[in-house]
Length: 409
Ligand code: CTP
Image 1 (cartoon, rainbow, N blue to C red):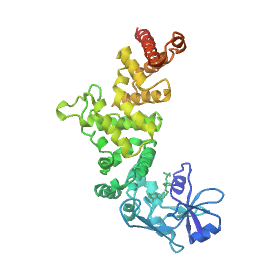
Image 2 (cartoon, helix red, strand yellow; image 1 turned 135 degrees about the vertical axis):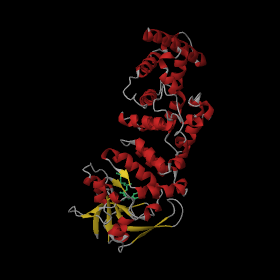
Image 3 (cartoon, rainbow, N blue to C red; image 1 turned 180 degrees about the vertical axis):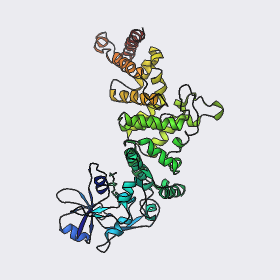
């Protein structure tokens, strides 16, 4: 049997990037031979094994045939007769379809190296269409390598467009889609992910609520970029430049969904979009079975981002309501992430990327003032149950009034 490194490990080594995951393909072996050598099988359906010592993945060379809709509809054909070239041709992109042996001899039948040099993401063969998730993968690679100058080949875009139009993306499971989306959002240029999905017609299939933001104007005074879709892309770009965590990036993507519902005769104003957007944010969260921390922050940032921007003008009582809604006493991190999302929203506007955002420190100061109210004296005064809660609120309000006066004096 022969063993080759394949996929990302070869690609990233040739790009001079660090290699984390190494996938290997095994040609000329049977399942029985692999088991006899101590390899551990992964799952029931896939001819994939883990090395007994290193735990790295070894897959038998295989061809795939599509037998139905979606990812479930796959049958695998693995046999010692399947060649390396036959295995590589069913892979997604030419840059992912190279193999190398232990001496670093490259097998590159589909010209991945040429496309690496030309900075092109190009599909290997029509077999690309066997897995619609690849539409998201290509957009993710575009987001990852945008800084190196990579773009998607026209013919690959055409294929992605056909796949999007065929409705096949609807058959993807929430788990597989979310894995791609969340990884793409954590790349250096997550806005490119959304842009590529939009360009091939996949955005309106996967996230029609985000697609709907393009072409919707906002007031030029606050939004020199005017278009809500472009603003959303800029906010996402800012979130990556500021190395924000996934929760914040997800909130950035969804914060303005309500603006897509504003009746045209109200444009460019979007009264109460923070509230109208909530049901859309909820629907998107559920569609992809998004992790709870991302769901929560997206909903809270959707509802309260305008409060964040107006922090210095808020009455002490409104400020208190905001802090209570975030449960800043038990969830300090979540409030920090909200502040970050607001700041990204403020900077994700044309020409305003470097603006200062005094609201951030002001909100932090307010949270600190509210948290500083001690419970003990109230307990000593005999408050308990709901009355204790009311007394705490009164004391916090007092503290916030004093804070506001001092901070804005
Ligand atoms: N692959 C594919 N189609 C998919 C998933 C994977 O063709 N839907 C192939 C590609 O050849 C890919 C390899 O399997 O390079 C390994 O997949 P994976 O580990 O998901 O990605 P990597 O390319 O290693 O990239 P990453 O750095 O994102 O892990």
